[in-house]
Length: 131
Image (tube, rainbow, N blue to C red; front, side, top):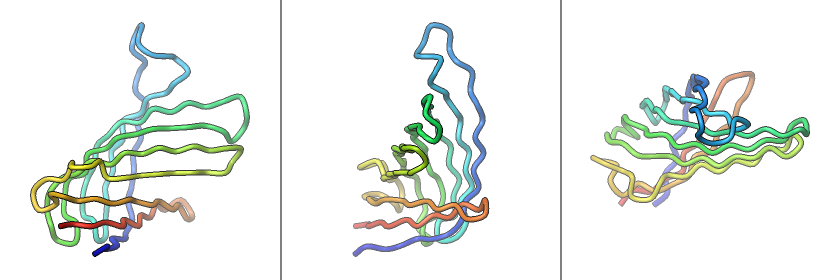
């Protein structure tokens, strides 16, 4: 049975320095620190890689984050994998639970998370299943 969890979250993104001789300097790296409220009461930490282009409004990013807390009262951890693109201002975003990443009472968690931003406030809608 599919369940929805909804709420808000706050995110802090901290630019990370480039490592000498590693990667491309045109790819930015950020540390992620989130606080979720609502049906998901949790914190997460992760990393994001992003690349911009010479075309205004076009970019891409990937990220991984480890979430720790309670989901509808069940405690544990899980990982989320992000893949996002912006094509001349048109966003496309996919965020999925990494398979078999759930622990504790979230063992077997699967699902996808959608994000909307309204007036600067971040909202999530997490559609998930648990065995």
